Image (cartoon, rainbow, N blue to C red; front, side, top):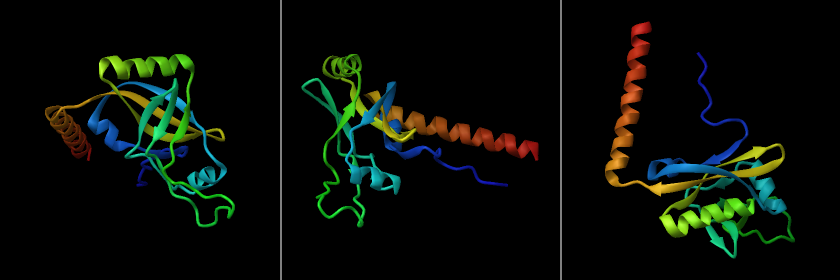
Length: 158
């Protein structure tokens, strides 16, 4: 019996904490403006977005707090900044929709995952509403119930 892989082939990293902390209302796909050493480090799997969030300035979206650990073999003439603010590439309408929801309705904008799409790095961002403590407990309880239900079905099949 083979164990199935936890992440898809094209996925770079995921923010599992975001789905626990927030209700995800809507998702968007954004491109990332990266430097050459960052792409090399991402290919080596050195990216995390667990503490990252999206900020809006001057009608532009930026990924703040994403960590890309530089490779030791990166070029000598480049001084890598592992947590620099990276620009997200979105349409103007998408930026207006996201920033409007954040400013008026109290939503948050969080990165959910980063993945390869052909040779480009894409970031899936979500328009999110924060969960209260009782919502988090309910989510855990539902997840445990689903797991127990699946185990019960497997035992009856054997």
